[in-house]
Every structure is written in C-alpha cells, then in structure tokens.
Image: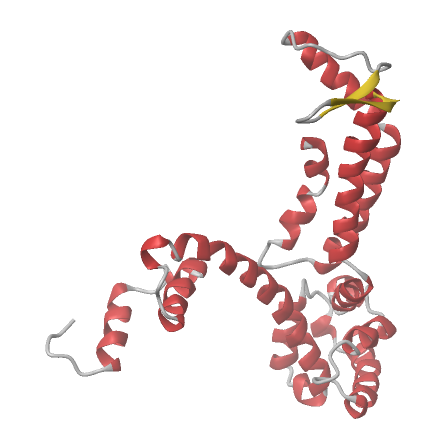
Length: 273
C-alpha cells in the first residue's frame, strides 16, 4: 500500500498547490497510470519477497503459497479452488491497483482531461510552445454559458491574431513565466482591450485551479471549525470563521489596527475599539 500511495504522491501534491502547473499535473496523471500498470505486471513477486523477508526478520509465520486458500468465515472455513499465492496476487494486489487506476480514470475522464489540457495550452512559457488553438476551443465548449456560438467565432479569430502578436511581434511577451505574468502583461500593454475574449479565457484559467484547491482546503477546514461545540452556527458565521482560517496567510499580513478600524466603521459603538 505504501508503494501504491507513493506513486500518486507527486500528483496529489501538484493538485493541492495554490499555483498549479496544469501541464505537469496532466502529465503526472499519465505517469501514475503507467507506474501502476508496471507495478501490476512486473513487481508483484518482488513485493511478496519483501514481505516474506520482513516476516522472517520479525519471526512472523509465512504460509505456504502453494497451498489452497482457506476462506475463514464466521460460520465455517471454506477451502477455495485456488492457491494462497493467487489470493494475494489477484484478490488483493491486483484488486487494489485496479481500484486506484479506476479512481484516476473517473476523476480524470475525457471531459476533465480536455479541460486541463486546454488550460495548459494557454501557458506562455517558452514563447507559448504549448499553444494549440483546437484544444483551447475544445475546452471552451465545456462552458456554453460563458462562450456561446457567436463568442466562439470571435474567440477563434482573436486567438489566431493574439498568438501571432504575442509570439512573433511584441517582445514584451517573450519571457513570461506563467498565466499570472500573461494576465498582468496583457493589462499593462492594453491588449486585454484588443482581445477581450482571450483575456476572459486567461482569467478563467487563473480562477479554476485556485477555486478547486480552495474548495478542497475549505472542506478540510470545516472539520476543525465546525466542532460539536459549534455545530449550530449559521451560514454567515460559518463563512466568517472559514475565510480567515483557510486564507490565514493573507490575514496574517493584516494588522490588528486595520481590523479594529474596519469593525469600528461598520457600526457606531459606545466604546472605541
């Protein structure tokens, strides 16, 4: 189990970062799948050898793997028609790995993959080397409320013009290191006015990873905030407690005096804070 969880550790770490590298994250999904498949096909015997060595070291009884497996139940012991080795290999080892792969396929299905790949294509690193207009447009099709048919036609034209502008003409876009730099440079150069739908797409690409990570951190924080003593708090009070807890790095930069002045200005009070 430790080896299996270690395979997806880098992927989990990457997806939980506030500043996600979407391109690397989607690659790590494929890497995890390939490593799990390799573990399933090639490393079962070596794992059994490791477990056996551990049992020998600590005087733990090792069963004869060639014996028939006995299913121990509450009512009776039933002898199966397969060996103990088959049980450990197929019913436990293969089953756990297959379950892990199924979870990855479910979480990163075709829709999710198209979304992540489309976001990665907006990355300006290495002079927009990942840019692919077809993948970007395929991603925008997932959001018809924000990008209807008329906007899609205009967006395609803006993308084709914008990529020539920022890659081949305007040198101010040559050394950008991420979507944040791209967004800032578009505003500084006033190009967000020339390519409004492209800029909307960039803002969307910046918002989605942060929103996803923030939601996960918020649900984790709820276990600490909404304890048995505070299980009847209303939504407004809950929100007021969660926001400072989840974004405590930001709130740590705010001085006590600023907080007191803010509360003082909300409502007239008898005493001065």
